[in-house]
Length: 375
Image 1 (cartoon, rainbow, N blue to C red):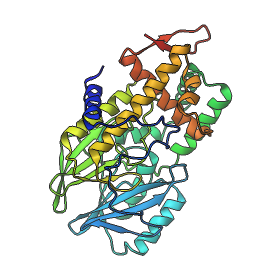
Image 2 (image 1 turned 120 degrees about the vertical axis):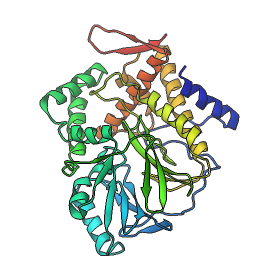
Image 3 (image 1 turned 90 degrees about the vertical axis):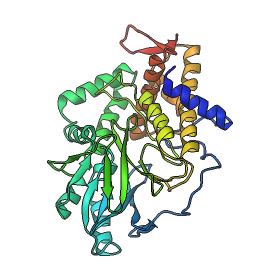
Image 4 (image 1 turned 180 degrees about the horizontal axis):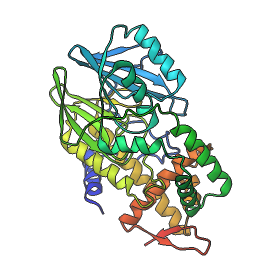
């Protein structure tokens, strides 16, 4: 058993939490622990800006997915503002930003852009913002390079690698074609990436106006997602690593088919539990700001352990492929192609982690599809 998982299990035992009900879908899981507290009853509406604290503004932009919004934060930075994330790169988001800059943000200058990670709902309009304001882009090196990779992901050799990856895990040709098509549509929603950036690295300190933020990075949901922690002001911008009501997607994809994304995510949660105080106001990439970071960390760890146990239970009945396990884990809702792709990626992440922990082993088959059985 990994050290981070031992730590998180100890946290659960010490907190005396009851077991949570089994999760039913990617974005549907048990409600947060009772000791989470939400200082805001509602999110900003369209064309609205909420001041969370002096020098901290909150904006919410629409997304064309089941997860239908993303949070953007502005941090006072001298004569201007640092923007954290941008929204997806489509015409609707450009129109939303235009209305904001002509309305409640009239006269606002963006002097620096921080993008937490390479997913299109966070980096999508980086090029547009940088061009509009002439401001520098700040990202971790891995996430910047991942963004560049995303923009060229449609190359034939990469599509072939993805097709073989899905076949290996038991997906039929029809669903594979849908997954590849929807994936390209999703990843295309990004403006041209700026040609230069400033690197944010774990352990850096970033001064934004009167505040000093420690840079924390973590894997699992993204490769090297950036989080910002201001201990003096008790603020923690958690990006998508810790969300209040849903679990961030933790997946494995064809580009690194044996990655232990879930292990990296659990390790990141354990680090956050160690280094970030429990009384911070958490500003997540989706959902409402909240208090109760450590309770939420424990619940997220429980959530993934329960999925691991569901998979182990199914594999004890008979060796299972990823395709056969998707309806086991996501068993109460019909999934479209977009959701199925993320569901399959999540199942592979749990399978790979169970392999690393030696709780499962691979059973080869004549048809080339891999199945999993208990050790």
